[in-house]
Image (tube, rainbow, N blue to C red; front, side):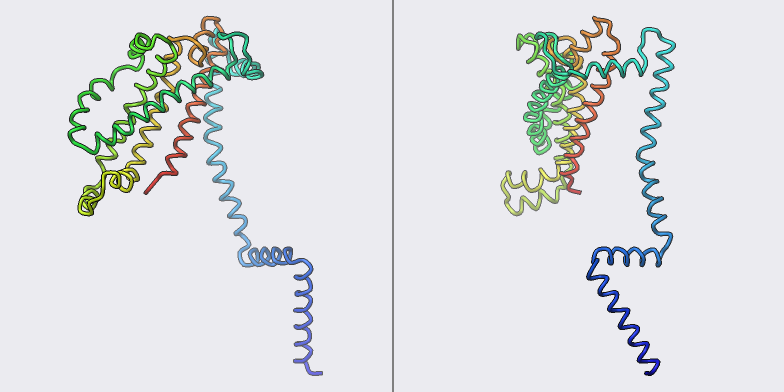
Length: 307
């Protein structure tokens, strides 16, 4: 037998062995061959990928962790020099005890921290929803029509700088109850950013778009739904984000003055009881809830980006 024939038989035998192995273990064969080929073609590729992934992870995790550690260290030093100020460890133990049963009810004026947070969120939600119902359409009208803009400009300029708490006595006088008065304060606080940002967005719509709509004799509803609304959405969502942040800040101060069940009243009640640990915990709760609200609205805003 010639050397060529022997070589052909050897090659065919090897091919049959590979096909049998692939038939018995198809997934393992593909993974093994793919991995072997990748490593053989570029041995350092896996190392570079791992290094890049690790670097991104540490860049994302390390800065916040370092910042929190520095903040906690400063807090511990200040509390050690101030006898009345509880430190991080004492506050942590108090928080663990506080959140063991956040939804207890002893009486209408003595409820767990969970009920206080939910009541504050309910007031913010009602006032915020009312502000959206009024502020967003008003912003579209003001931005769309020059007459409406000129008419509303002095009113907005006059009332927008007024402190939100200055509206609380008006609410108490009109509504004769603490809950509606607090919701009124949220409404009057949240409505201005929605009006202004929506109106600015409408005014930024390119005139060419409106000229084309006029040439095509589009109805006002078509102009709104096909041109204005998609273009103005990012501006409108910015106003919504600003409104929710401001509303959550204001509700704490409003509840301190009106009483009832809520995070603001709870802070004031704990101050009267000289329970400073709970006041610090309330500060963190207000910050965390506000952060979550803003992040949720930012997530929604990214879904409506038309860029």
